[in-house]
Image 1 (cartoon, rainbow, N blue to C red):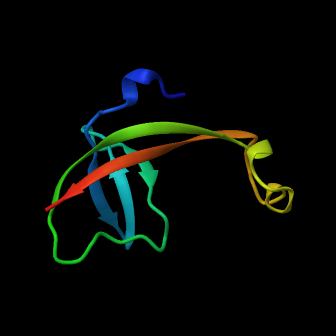
Image 2: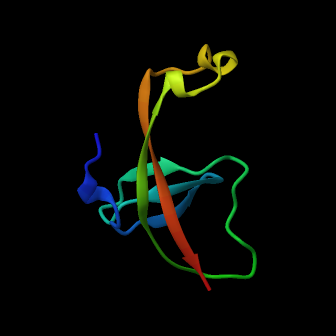
Length: 84
């Protein structure tokens, strides 16, 4: 589980086999970006940090999607990515 100390920690954006991942300063994968996500064209990645950690629950989703979810509770990193 993540704690409040996780917010604002720096992250790196890494492309691994076509998937964009967020890594911490130790190179550990924290999150995977959506498959359809890509960085904005023509800009350089300047810095990134953990903006927030959001806790999701199966009950927070529409009934029609719940059967597809593998966990009852999970956390997701909401990054702040700065380009210039």
